[in-house]
Image 1: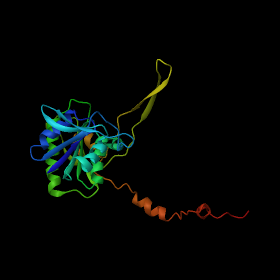
Image 2 (image 1 turned 90 degrees about the vertical axis):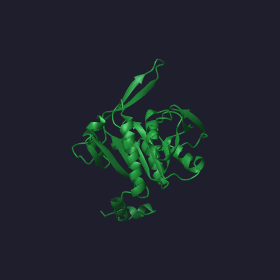
Image 3 (image 1 turned 30 degrees about the vertical axis):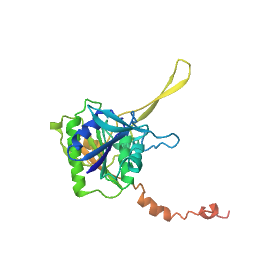
Image 4 (image 1 turned 30 degrees about the horizontal axis):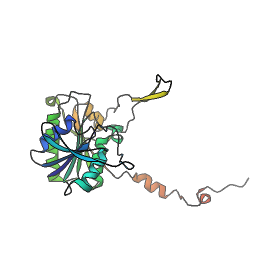
Length: 264
């Protein structure tokens, strides 16, 4: 396969090249990644600044292309300009830190995979729980096997896989859980401070997400030591509400949408 490999941690990130080492054994891999860390940029793209891309040699002689933009920019630029042909698969990762629950909405790693899916290309976003040290090599080997499985089985149009690895030694992984996206919101905070020039600033923070007892939720599966694989679909339409809204009688004329006024 021809694979486009990217991330949101920058082209020098260890997890990126761990994936490269596994994927390049059987596939043609092009690395196009941000020139610096772009964690939590979500699906942002660059519109008001020029995008620049240049070759780099990292990790003992491996070659890639660094872009001064976001993960989604990297995928767009790869598809529209850099690659000679459409890739068979896009892989984003390995991200240090899990992307489950509400974090999916903020993740640049997930956004890169979603950008590929929007263009009709199968994709994998891969992340690792915890704050290190990370066992990148076995996780990368798993992603490479999953890539081969996608090649044989395919993915539905507009869909991609969000894969998360638990923070346990590889030999202690409980198995693989096909899980759904958890929507629990963690407690959040803003810490107000004052700098030496007497100007107010804020540090944003959040407690660890809680996923309850349902083992089929992505974060709960991860906390139980499973590799969590969640299929994500780009179509965000809420279909039950779509049908309900059709019965609301919404009109372009304000008076048509108001209930009749009762006489006193």
